[in-house]
Image (cartoon, rainbow, N blue to C red; front, side, top):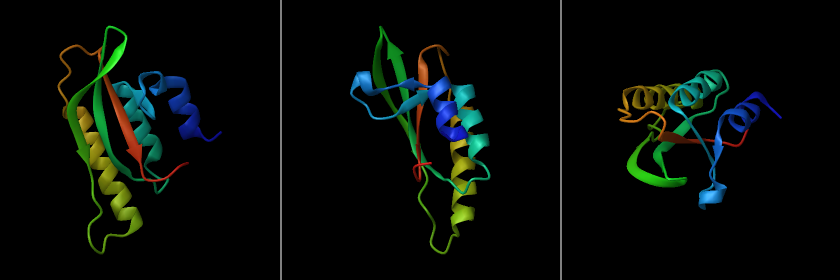
Length: 110
């Protein structure tokens, strides 16, 4: 198991019990994940902000995405996409930090 999979399995909340594919992370863990992906060539395509309410997940309908630009290299795209994800997550206002989770979508399976 590589460091990405190990990290999300240890720090994340599996969403399958809510009928959603993926693993959500708290803000600091999502930002740490972005740092771990910095030199892997992996881009973050986007993500969703979720809220845990009474042991169920609700969509906040807040999200971000990053489309590849024409003539952008793989590395340029990956770095720009990581920066956009980091900026979005850092700036997201969390009224109650215990309730907010981030579902990050990466460009390829690691």
